[in-house]
Length: 235
Image 1 (spheres, one colour):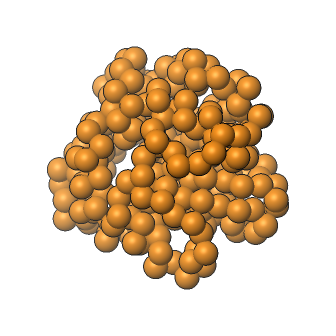
Image 2 (cartoon, rainbow, N blue to C red):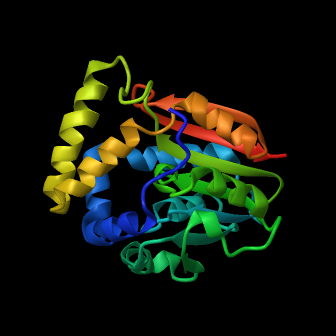
């Protein structure tokens, strides 16, 4: 699958506004709290320096930023997300009160060229309305050799997670049911499942990163390779 056009940005924004109040709880339950490990592993692998500036795109309620500041207390973080509800949840974290936040999209980053040392996206790339444009914008704001860190669900092929029966059963049936039950929004978690299954494969992501100007692209598979950590650098 090579579609670079994502969902309508307003539909996505409204959906995340609806599920924002119970989003963190749903994530912990649905991942058995393993999502915290994925974020920690991703940022440890990125080797964040104390004096670097990092931008978290689709920052949600701040899980990635909070993890980054714990790993590297001297690092400077920024967050951007289209959902006001998610950003309100972010602001409720006392440890993140000083983090500058912007309500906006990855396709139109309000930052100067070559000003950010690293960019993170945790489970948000598939929700970009224009994925190629988003990657080009990220490339623009990164300094030379800056890092892009992506955590995302990737199918093995279009519509199929993997050959692992448990992974397929959990992601296709259990996750949408539990997500809808916890959040009270069944359509949102059906969308999250469908958008993931029909997103790029890891191979497609690799290709589009190269097209956007990134190099040294590396991947680590988790959860029967349905979840992938990708780290790339700006040329």
